[in-house]
Image (cartoon, rainbow, N blue to C red; front, side, top):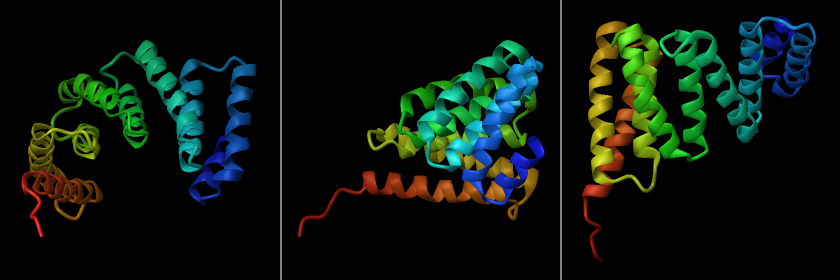
Length: 193
């Protein structure tokens, strides 16, 4: 079932993948599979809901996965950090900026300590945090400056670790351009006609 669900998902057939993912999770519960397997199935289901635009449902599951990972693996485990990043990303997309910001401020230092400054996931978390700052229409100038500063630093690290052609480096650079544009727009007073 997992292979079928993954295949349908990868092929972009999210509507078809959904009942397979739901059945897989139900089957694992019925047979009392280990918690690790349940969390993977829940994460896959959340991703499918997200792709279908059912973000509130994805958010609830991602919150459960993050909580489950904390209990099962502790906060320094890569799977827990991945779950935290996924949860924060969906929070941003649903405009729950303060919750996302709080989670990232808590978990980025953990990722730095556990995985290192140049780890792919640490860089993704810092990107996510910066996007939380500049995507919020209520962001202050200080928030926008912090987003730019965070992304400048993250871009340098990504270049050192992955080079400029890596998709993650390109994503960070794109976010940096967006953050700088948001900052310029706020710093530049509107001109009167």
